[in-house]
Length: 198
Image 1 (cartoon, rainbow, N blue to C red):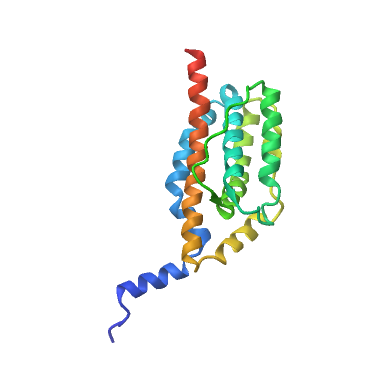
Image 2: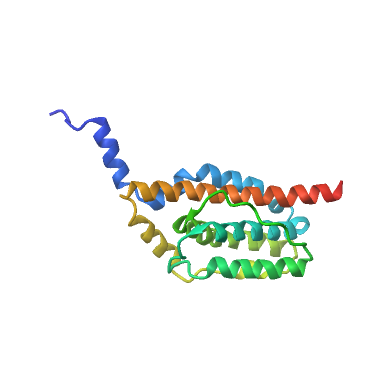
């Protein structure tokens, strides 16, 4: 017996069954990779570029906070605010002059900001190991962690919006824009650093 379900109907059913947390991971993958490439200066030589990395993260984090549309959800809590505070102290300790804030092109859904803030904490362990292996003291920003279970709970919260196409599309688009802010911050820091040495 032939399946009477059209290909369009199957596609719609597949989209409805795809969770927002999975869509975020797959549909922002290009922006995520490009952002990692933008910070290659640091990962290639942490000892030479730690202060620049901290400064770029501060600029990006301040931009995300300024752009946030809505209060942080419970799983994120004060994580981004605490990160900004820690990065400010780390930059001061490193003697890195404060940089001007990035212009924020539009407001970003608080779930997109939370996705970036919580997700970044997952990757911080790898970066922290690179810093310590380079013989450097670990900056305070690298010691911040999300509460246990926060990432799983946040993904579950995201998935409650999986079948809300308007909200889901906005969160994905705004997460991409958040990665753009990180790349803009990296470009600002290393452009300034390179200009200072030429």
